[in-house]
Length: 252
Image (tube, rainbow, N blue to C red; front, side, top):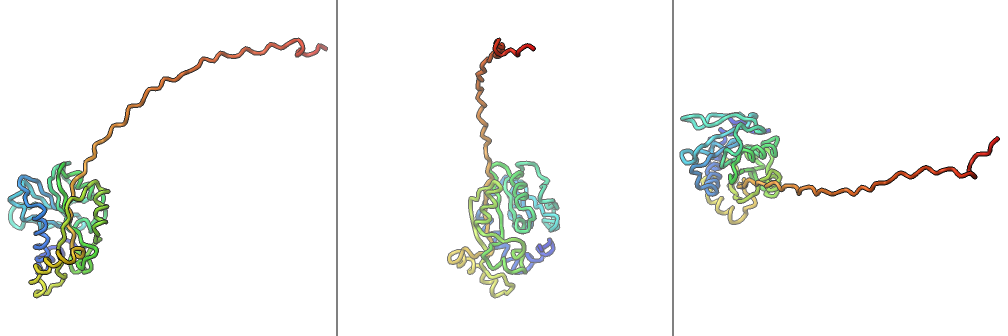
């Protein structure tokens, strides 16, 4: 069972959700510090992480899968979100420069189809960033957060899935080392947990962030077929044998 848009909105409105948003957004900003003049697409429930791109990128939109539901974003101004079928993104080919996928891949029923759709709309030289729950982390084991729903991933699993979908991982980051509990004294020390986790136990982060580039394979033309001159021998028919007198049948 996956969280719908109301559950996701409520999570990010809680203290624990705000801490998660802050820590993940820091890593996103480190990977994509400059999006000026670029078209940015957020897929899944990526709107909490798209706000810093407003006013910087050329275009920012958020698309949410039909089974999750959609909500208006931003709260004021023109709505930049839409409800879509993740198997058929309503965007032209090679129209986006950056795609941020959050709360999307682990909840998808057609992961490879979704990634192929992202590959289709991503421009040459474009970048995809995916945020997924870490299979080894504590957050994937707590259903009170969105990261405890759907399929968590290990680094090797996400690498294989990306390569099968014609993406090449180019950068890795981790986040969320603070335990996933709404206990305010614990949340106040989230920054210390992050520093210690990156130094001491990076494999046990709550989420994995991976940036990937679009692979474009040039088609190799098949070698021209060589014309082979067939050598046909003319074979003359053999004459029928003429019966000898000895072979003649005796007369009655």
